[in-house]
Length: 222
Length: 204
Image 1 (cartoon, each protein chain N blue to C red):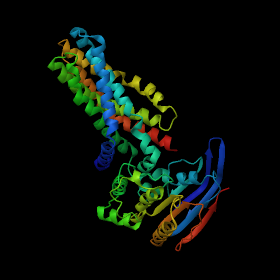
Image 2: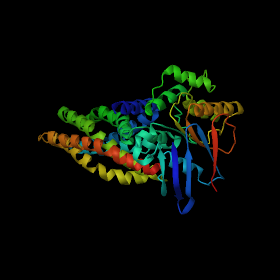
Image 3: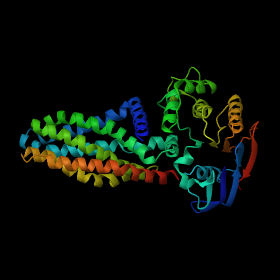
Image 4: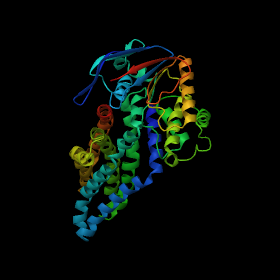
């Protein structure tokens, strides 16, 4: 079981390394969107500190959305997805591997660069730590929920827009608790509760989303 | 071994075929023939279990393929009209990755040997995007060299191949049949397969 998940992760990471432009462009999108806010709002530290969690999280959601349409589309186009569906193990395990690989190339880099961007918003070091932790904990849920949307819109014309309409509303809980964790830390309440809820959402979506996506993929392959 | 009963296929509003059945035993080859749009690929996709039939049932070793699931897929090798190779990976990486993902043990030496047999020696380390159409097809076909699963389902395997490669593939298929394997394939080029019993099924 673990073997097949690792095989999928290894293959997808190798493919991502051969196509680094995709990773870099999503990361740059994140950096630029976040950096535009301090420039537009001006040097008002109080206001920036208030805005920071929301801005960073909304940018992280949008950056994740950028890479979602390709999650299954490439495999679908070249026929690899059929072969994966015909392999003698449940398709849900394959999708679990793809979700993990997607997080490693889209969510993890965002979490690593977020603290650097947080400095532009004059966040305290406590808040930066919580921000990084929240993005680390929350982005796997984004990849998981996104996989369902990517599988449902596979092969549709204009699927990209439909994908955003399907997936962004489902991202709202992650956004609320992710930004809430940083807010709570800034205001001195402590963000542990929010972080626990984020972790719960991540585990729930990693357990459930691959199987829902696999069911959608089977319909797309008919 | 492989039996189909009373199959019916409906795509969109059109009924492509109904009441179709066949039986295939070890060492037999089934040629599916028919004009474009007759439902050859749809029938293949039913046999491999990706497309549920509107009516009827397909059985492998006496068990319905819908209920046996993973067990049936462990006996199946499917080659579609898409090559299922990754342009960014080299032929060697493609072969090893597809074996790993299909839960097959394939050593690097075996993979290199298979690539040599399909005439890709010296190109193992070149990304597949630099290969020609026919060479890409050969990478996809290299899977068959070490493939020991009993049921092969091939969709237009001879497309884009030169004469030498067509003969080589016919040889590989006969060896498979001699070992007691089964093959179902569609083709517009009738290629003589030297061994095994050949059955034909015309869809119209």
